[in-house]
Image 1 (cartoon, helix red, strand yellow):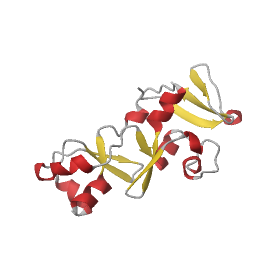
Image 2 (cartoon, helix red, strand yellow):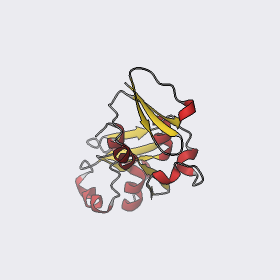
Image 3 (cartoon, one colour):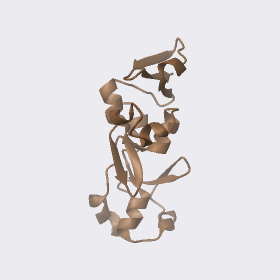
Image 4 (cartoon, helix red, strand yellow):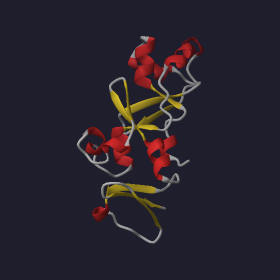
Amino acid sequence: MSYLPNTLNSFWLWREVYVKLGISNPAYKYWKNTPTLKLNNKYLFIEKNTLPQKHEHIEEVLTDLSGHLPIKYASDQLHVNEHLFSCGKMSLHREFEYKFVEDIKFVNIRKFFRENGIKVSKNSLVQLAKLKDLELTPEATFYNLKNDYAIVVYD
């Protein structure tokens, strides 16, 4: 499986952690052995299995985000307007699976990539767009989707 859909496989959404624990928002800053990941300078995630021992019990009820990405981050990584994931009237909107965690909408990129056979390496550039808006190069891999959309992976 490619890198992009696996970004959050080993992370919990920080907002969900602190809400369910009833602790203050910046508490993670004092947890020395708990690595974090920040996406789009907006979403903060805490690495799984690194919570302080007195808080480990909360991991059983946290939402697994494996294969999911926040829609804003996903739209940035796929170089597409966020509107695609937000508006049900967009033709590709129904092709994705979504989940909400603490009022943040996540899109299941892993499922979409698997269903369409899309493979993306760590340093690849990915673009999702209408066929007429894509630029194909010899080193690019083209994936035709529904409704005149396609994905191009530039290696």
